Image (spheres, rainbow, N blue to C red):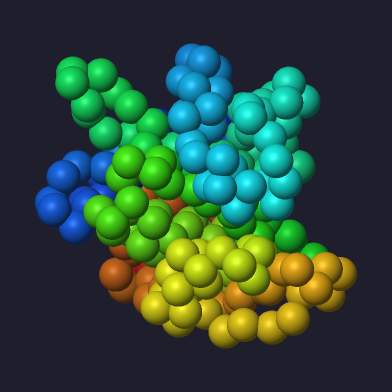
Length: 207
């Protein structure tokens, strides 16, 4: 996946379901999402933005917005979760993740629109991230959050993450989980395409 071409991005999209059964499309961010992505962050509550970025911001600074729109650069990726709302594709959640090949780990951060809390979106998105991490070859997935962010702490705990002290900031806590996605399940497009690619590289493996 680190050799993604822009014209191929959509094949890595997944359709998930909310707790109520509504379709949730998870895909890589695209240049056309610039205004919608900025609108999404502006619409978050002050607390949600603070929890996401560990600081007070009202919108994505130009440099950070540019970084969010760069998919695959320096093994960093941004995905958005969208739903059809009043006939329009609307971003209801996002996640940014980075693959660290030297440690075989994937680091991530995510947020969900305040109006869509309680729909199981964060849980579904986190499971999808685990699958994407496995496809990249990660052996662990981890994130950092404020100790005061009870929502994220609860989500990580329920999702099977273990907690450790953050190495650099006492206000933060780190949660980590070993990747145990079973290949036979192939639960997301990223895993399926990675598996097919590996079979093509080693045809004897499937003989």
